[in-house]
Amino acid sequence: VTLVEAVLVPERSVDEAFERIRALHGPAIGRVARGYEADAERQRDVVQEIFVAIWRSLPSFEGRSSERTWVLRIAHNVAVSHVVKSARDRLAKCISVEDLEEGRVPALDPRSSVEARDEVRRLAELVRALRPADRQVILLHLEGLGATEIGEVAGITPENAAVKVHRIKSALRAALSTKEGAR
Amino acid sequence: MSAHDDDLGALWREAETSPLPSTDEIRTKSDAFARRIARRNLREYVASALVVVAFSRMLVRSHDVLERVGAALILVATAYIVLRIRRDGRAAPAPVTATTTAEHLAHLRRELARQRDLLRDVALWYIGPFVPGFALFVAASAQRGGPVTALVTLVGFTVVVAGVVWLNRRGARKLDVAIGALDDQESQATVTPSPPSPG
Image (cartoon, rainbow over all chains, first blue to last red; front, side):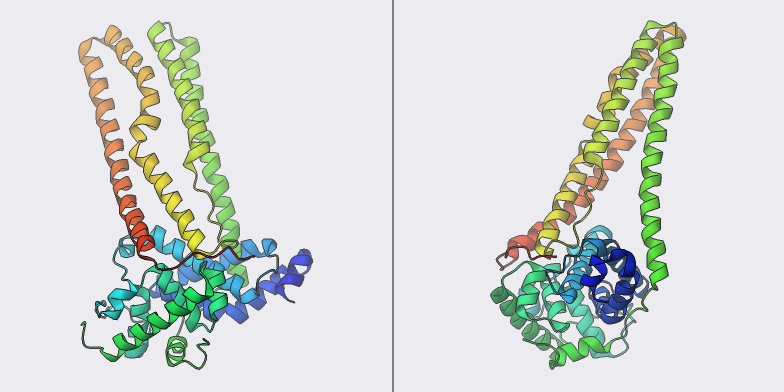
């Protein structure tokens, strides 16, 4: 049951459509939560918030964008809301792409124990340190979205999306390769 | 620009994520959210009804003209506050589905600014309307119990009001920090917004 079919015949299969979204996009939603929250408990909260928003939005889905784009747009908007509402103190500490490029990156947080491998953990922390708009662009790219889809979700032109992705990726690679620099 | 064959993409997808909630859990959470909103609305109505009942009773039964006028003014103030909270006090639901994140952030900024203004101006719109009615109660208590009673009532009222204003202003300052952070990010963004995409 596709999401469009579920919405056209809501009494039949919203549950089934939701189950399908959960199975198909659940891991990506989990990674979106990881991109906004380091703490495992809070990640679970964000994941739940995202799924509740999807559940409540199912009847309004019009099928004019792809299901994945729709799901990720909700996921990112919910996650951004979460940061603005629940983690305002961290918002002011977010770094720009320029900071990342110039090596002004945060020290490794010893509390973020969700990711086992050091490199994986460092990447997550660098991504989480970015400002929400930049963070979203790179998270969508890391999920495999193209520039057009990223632009659709983020509200920027595909050209801008491509430029941003390129810059952020280069800066992330550089920051990861000089691990010890900022600690 | 696919990330599937990308080293960073592979690294990103390598980490474990939180376990997914079940459909039943989500349904329960969604229902609980709707119930919470209904309970909040009910609480607001009950609190307003209690004030209306108490001061209507005073308006009808009191033999003191000052008290009766004071009660009438408190009722008018209560009606104004209820209408004001209904109009401005509730957060507009965040349109998470139909908007791009740029629009969503703009919505969040507007919401934060609205909340900040309400908190910052609480003395004007929330406490101010009750002052005339309360002043008459103080005058009535001065007539009945003497200046000491009136002074105690006045000091008590002032302390409570000062505490409420201080707490709200502190909340407003915290919101200002968040708004400043959002503005800062927006001003440094190098992107051009594109038209919203369909949902």
